[in-house]
Each structure stands twice: as C-alpha cells, then as structure tokens.
Amino acid sequence: MRDARDAHREAVRGILTEEQLAQLEAFQLERLVARIERQIERHNDGSERRLELLTQILSLEPAQVEAIREIHAGVVPQLEAILAGLKDESLSVEDAHSALRELREATHAAVVAALSEEQAALLKELKSMRHRRGRRGPRA
Image (cartoon, rainbow, N blue to C red; front, side):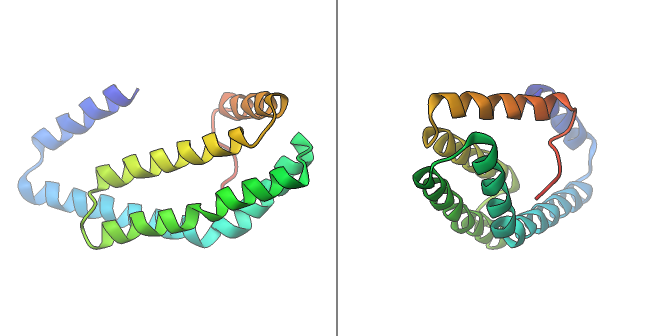
C-alpha cells in the first residue's frame, strides 16, 4: 500500500511546476502542523478516556494503569518536539510523518509490554475488530 502511495506521490510531483510543488508542500506542512497541534490539545482528555476503557475491558491492575499513564504522558513532549522541528524547518514533512509513525508504534509496543499475554491478545483482537469496521473509530 505504501509503495503504491509513494509511486502516486512521485507521479504527481513529476507533473507539477516548481511553484505548484512549493504550494503543495506548504499546504502539507500547514495541515500536518494543525493536526499535531490538535493531537496535543486533545491528548490528555483522550488518553484518560482510553485508559478508562482499557481498564474496564482488559481488567487492568493499578500498577498497569500507572505504567500506561506514564507511557501516555511521554507522548506530548515528543509530539511537541516534532511540531517544533516542523516549525523551525529542521524536520521535513516526510520525516515528521515517519517520526509520528515511529512514535505511534513505540507507544503501542510500550503499552502492550505493560500487559499480560492474555490482555495483549485481547487488545490485538480489539484493534483488528476496529480495522474490520473499515475505519479507525472515533477520534479522541
């Protein structure tokens, strides 16, 4: 899927003028900055709500709840660092997308590591059910 997306992106870039390409890149940067700013604003409320749901569904122990809360608390500073890199142009849009993907994967892996095998299996099943619905679910 990513290969097809990259090929399409390169085909589009191949037909754009320099001015159009600059406009596209500025638009992509603006969209990504706005998205990260929204993620930061909504993170704390959303992460607590998700943690409450996980606690109910997975029957988390208090120590697990605190471990996951600490994992989530570490996300905002990393989002802010990515945002700062975009704003000061030390980070490209593509690099920011990669950094966001790595952050999402690392956060998920850390959460899974805090779970028992049974809880991790149930979380994996819940995630696959969400993807089978054809969308990621409500945005928190």
